Image 1 (cartoon, helix red, strand yellow):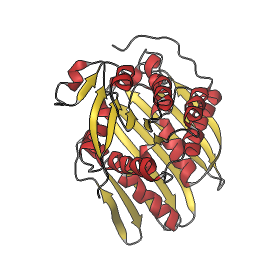
Image 2: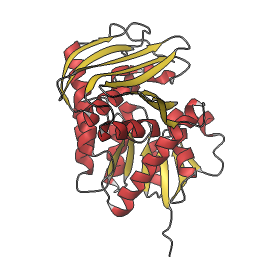
Image 3: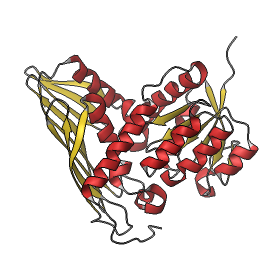
Length: 331
């Protein structure tokens, strides 16, 4: 007999919340029954799905089997704790919280009670899954250099990320956590050696540019650079060079291995649409979450890994001594 579909709610229906809804709609094991979103204009097209103005109302008034939290980061703790107290499993968008202390509070709220999985989607996007397999197979030979760059113009990232009150510190937390997690997972990070973190392009109090140097366990120093700019810029790559071959990931586009025989495409997205290119990874992440909820199978990203990523971000901010020099509400 087929199992009943899990009744899922989504808290937060912005850019990433709407992609989660698409992933739920394409999965036969779940059904979307409720959305919490204060901006009614964002939920006008959701049909008969129950909508609520706040996550508190959703939790109080709708019976759900699981909750996807895609709220601004500053609201993660309160929403996650509310779900935990009701025994509701949660898929929580990264980063867990604006601070490491709050990430620990979220973890502790779920321990021994109900499942919690953190959506570190870099572990699921197929171009990065392919890259990880190449590296683990040893196809590159001895690793010589590792570099990651993410530079976004305002047309390529949600402007609400600039809201320091709701999303925390800025780009190093929101985007840099992916790179730090990626390098730690693939190579191991001994320590953050240096961090230059700046608020230079916007005046909202959020850091919008950073350059990080980390020492890997193989002794190499790796570089990570992040930028939010007020232009149409989109320049992003993850590049690893080895003695036998090199590897380049162009996020949401492709993964390519280059060796003496030429270029070998490991994965290429079929859609050039930025939101649609997120869907394969978010869908794979959802499937992992369902396995955790139904069968208590450990997900690809453990809570230990999620907390470790938050620790590395905290270390970067401590190294930089970054403090915002002004705050303007981005709205």
